[in-house]
Length: 110
Picture 1 (cartoon, rainbow, N blue to C red):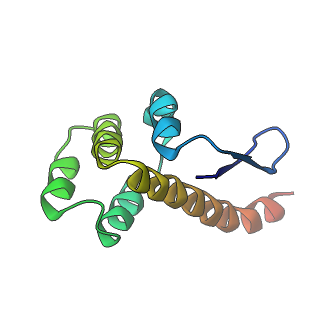
Picture 2 (picture 1 turned 180 degrees about the vertical axis):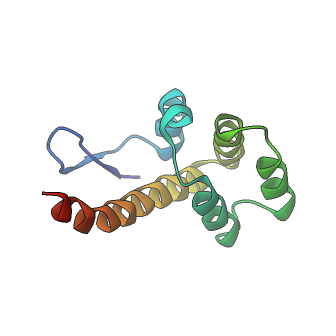
C-alpha cells in the first residue's frame, strides 16, 4: 500500500510503500502531541464503521485530548491496515481543509 504525506520542507507529497499500520505505530508519539480536530477524525472513523458507538463513547470519555488521541490510535491499530490507512487519509483531508480555511485570513493579514 502506498502512502503519501505532505513534506514540511518542500510542501510536496512524499510517497512511501511503508504500511499504514507501521507508519501509525512509528509516528504514534508525534501524533499524540500534534493531532488536532479529534472530533472530526472520530466522526469520520465512526461513519466509515471503523469505530463502534461504544468505542466512540469510551474515547469521548477520556480525560484530555492526549488520552483521546492515544485511544483513537490504539483502537485503529488493533483493527489493522485498512483502519490505519483510513485514519491517515482523514488526517490528510482534514489538514488540507483547515489550511484552505486559513489561506484567506493570511492574505488579509499581509
